[in-house]
Length: 545
Ligand SMILES: *C1O[C@H](CO)[C@@H](O)[C@H](O)[C@H]1NC(C)=O
Ligand SMILES: *[C@@H]1O[C@H](CO)[C@@H](O)[C@H](O)[C@H]1NC(C)=O
Ligand SMILES: *[C@@H]1O[C@H](CO)[C@@H](O)[C@H](O)[C@H]1NC(C)=O
Image (tube, rainbow, N blue to C red; front, top):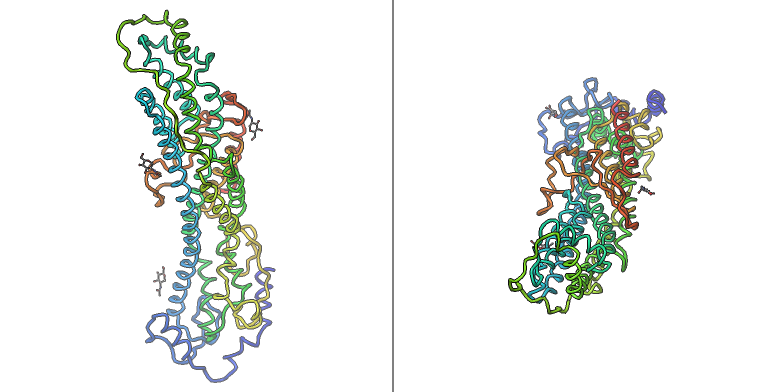
């Protein structure tokens, strides 16, 4: 229905319109004075009896108790009230997502701490203590990766095993002269002799998968909080402000102090005012779906929590195995590599390499599934808020604000107390072209909202890649397209917080799981990612038309 038809229909609904006009004598403004005073305004300029309303600029003209100044003041007040309601709705969603984010991060980092301490605690003998810094270094890298720094997990793991090996050889009796060539040769020997058993090959894809998944979920939560925060601050347009005044306080100016707006009238106003926000719906839903899918990786015995806890056992088992093979391995390396560096015989051994400490590490069974529970609670919340953006107009037009479905004849329709006839618009900016209540230029989308839609696309893509075991390693650069000044930093997460940045296209590091071979840099998925970026920038260009 277009505007002129709507106006015609209103004009054909005369009974309520004539309410005061027909009475011959101007009615009292006592009710309006009472209402106006209750809102904290001065009564000095409020008329005692109705005026003819040619001076009104927002409300329909006709007998009224409002002066121009009252109309403006009520209009300002209605805008503030609706903005406050929107912010409150946003804040409650934001708070809830934030607490899930905080709970997840806090517990995941705590798990890493526990895994690390139980591993360090298991290194009881002096000879094992020399390996402690190497293990600590690995956990530091894992934490750094999780927090969004530019750590390359695969390289970090390779480096970790190489350092363990070096420590082993340095503890050799008699000592070896370990130049660079020697170490390189020793590493080659290790590939064949496998002093750590299968652990390096077996752990790599599991570590990568676990941390890619945990990080992407954390970043998904972070971005969703940011999107809610930024979008809830979007200001109402001047056209929307007029429509809101007509909706909320024009009945008062009309003398209809107790008449609430018709529900579908309210929905049209709010759908018009929140048209841009509703355009978040599709991408918001995609993000929620991707997070729900990633959340599945946290379930059960093969879940993230069990793996992080069991990592301690797996690493200490690898160390044990190496210690058992120490002598044989050293001899092999000595034979194969000694020509690479001068032998340096004669000095006493730095320490004994005889004891084989009994490893006590945390039993994965004690992990208790708390991370799983946190993630499942979060999933429930995500499902509940999946339609947040399109539900917002309905939520604002609740029974407190409107007359409700039982009073469709007896509500304020913008002109009088009568049924509201226009249809309720569908959601989103493009569907507001015929919105009878709010004038909107549908060719000018709100840029804040568009930017947040981009953010949602980017982080959803990360989550989907994480599901495939892939990670596009976004670099933490200062070219932060999300803007700065986030206002939600928790503890040490702040400086390196998982900001989403678009990587330089020659930089993605691809991890593939479960296939254990490394995909050559620039393999097929780089192309996929580049085409995604291309698609995204095309989208932006189209939106900016
Ligand atoms: C890239 O990712 C897709 C799934 O998104 C997968 O099917 C494909 O095998 C991957 N390509 C390479 C080269 O890893
Ligand atoms: C209403 O708000 C506008 C802009 O915020 C302001 O300029 C104006 O003075 C306000 N009017 C009244 C009556 O408070
Ligand atoms: C983890 O341990 C470090 C010190 O080792 C500590 O500063 C940090 O607060 C711990 N984090 C959690 C979540 O327990």
